[in-house]
Image (cartoon, each protein chain N blue to C red):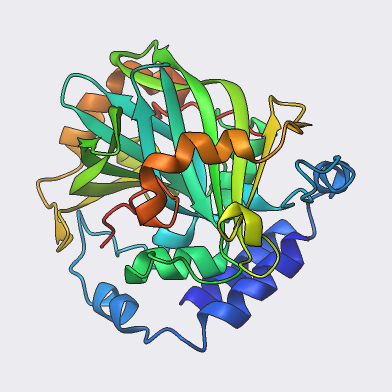
Amino acid sequence: MKYAACLLNLLLLIPYQTMAAEKTQQLLSKSNGISYPVGWQNWSTISVSQRTDNNTLRLIVGNAIAVKAARAGRTNPWPENSIIGKVVWKDEQLSTWPTATKPGKLIHAEFMFKESNKFVETYGWGWARWVGKQQRPFNNGMQQCITCHTPVKENDWVFTEPASLP
Amino acid sequence: MKYAACLLNLLLLIPYQTMAAEKTQQLLSKSNGISYPVGWQNWSTISVSQRTDNNTLRLIVGNAIAVKAARAGRTNPWPENSIIGKVVWKDEQLSTWPTATKPGKLIHAEFMFKESNKFVETYGWGWARWVGKQQRPFNNGMQQCITCHTPVKENDWVFTEPASLP
C-alpha cells in the first residue's frame, strides 16, 4: 500500500505541478555551506510541538531514512544520511475555535543533516536554517545551533521525540 | 525533485518494511461504514494545531488531492476525493525544554472523505474516526462529527486552515 500510495502521489502530483516553486528553491543560497533540501514540504511527519516561551507551533519532518528510524525507535544515534527538518510558525488563534491555535507567520525551516564523516567537528551533524517565507539562508555558523542543542547531546543532539503513531 | 524524492522513498521504504503494520490496518473495522485509509502516516502535512481547552496537539495531513488543493489555496470547496486526516495527541511537557510540549498519548485519528455523490446526506463528506493506539473504530454515526463542525459549514465544514509553506 505504501508503494501504491506513493505511486498515486507520483501520478497525481507530477503532471499538474509547474515545478516553479521547486526550481526557485534549488536556486536558494546555501546555509552554513549546506544546500537546500528541496522537496521537504512533502516529507512525512516525525512529530509536532508547541512552545509557550515564544508562542510557536512546530512541525518536525524527516527524509525517508529519518522517518524510518523514528518509526522504528532507532534514534540514538540517528542513522547516517538522516535529515530532520523543523518548521516553525508563530501561533495564532483559530477564529472558528478560539481555544485552538493555527500556524501563523512562517518563522523558519531548520534542518539537521547526519553525515558523521563530513561533519566531524560539529558532532556528526550539519546544521542549517532558512528564514521566513523567502527562505533567506542563515549563515552565522553552526555553533549557535549547537549551543542551543547542547542540553540534548546525549540524545544525539536532537530535541524531538517521535510521536506515537498507530 | 518530487519525482526523485518519491522514487527514493519507494526504494528505501519497500525493501525493508515488513508491511505487517499496514496489513493489520487493512483488517481494521469500518468507522461509520468507511474503510480505514491505510498509509496515512506517510501523507504530507496540511497544518498543525494546539488546543488549550483539552491540552492536545494536532497534526493535519491529507492525501495527494487534498495536499495539492491546500497548497494551492483551493479549499472552499475542497476537491472531490480529498481525504483530510487529523491526528490528536494529549500534549506533554518536553523534559529537555520545559516550555515546550510534545505529543503524548494518541487520542484518535479522524478523517473527512469528500465524495459529494456518495455522502449526499452528510454535506458531501464521509466522517470517520479510529480511537487510540489500537485504532478502535468509532461507530456512533456521523451526526456527532457534523454537530461539532457546524460552526465551519461555510468553510466546506473544515476547521483547518492550511499552514503557510515556502
